[in-house]
Image (cartoon, rainbow, N blue to C red):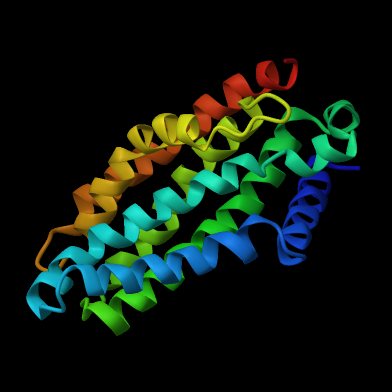
Amino acid sequence: MSTARIAFSIARRDVSLELSGREASITVLPFVAALMMLAGLGLGGQGPVLSAAAPGLVWLVVLVSAIPLARGVAAAERADGCWDLLRALASPTALLAGKLAALWLWLLIAWAVASMLAVALLGAAWRPEAAVAGVLGTFGVAVTTVVLGVLLPHGARRPGLIAVLLVPGAVPVLIAGTHLAAPATSGLPWALLLASYDAISLITAYAVFPALLEE
């Protein structure tokens, strides 16, 4: 079986598991909705303040929502006792691609939900550049999240440690994504920053992933 087909099978299985009631469907998406609504209340309902804070809030929500998803990257396979078998049967490239595709999809959904709520509840202005930020930014976050998820030891429940590692590492996504979504901002430099971040993250993950699988 080709690498692409193995990666597709892994991604499809991960998406199916999430749809059956794992972190994304029962924890992350309700959390995204609740946080966006609470932000509207906490900021006092002042239109200019809400619309100005909305772009950064969307990306902060995306970063925070990646924390529980990191714990689920290999949780199902480890719980079933088939993680070692999967590592033996699938190449590191196929395993990375499959896990990355599934997680990228869920982060894109989280970003889309947060963005729609920002427009509906916070009065944020929608820019086409925001969609570019959504695609590029969530990809980079997904790469980092997959690496951290595989790096976690079996049975680890350390969301605080994940946050300490993930959020600072994704600061370029937070900054560039916020500026791309903000009105009256030149989008090209920030889009290039996101693309560079994605490339560096992916190359690094590709280089270290085989070693992580041997742990």
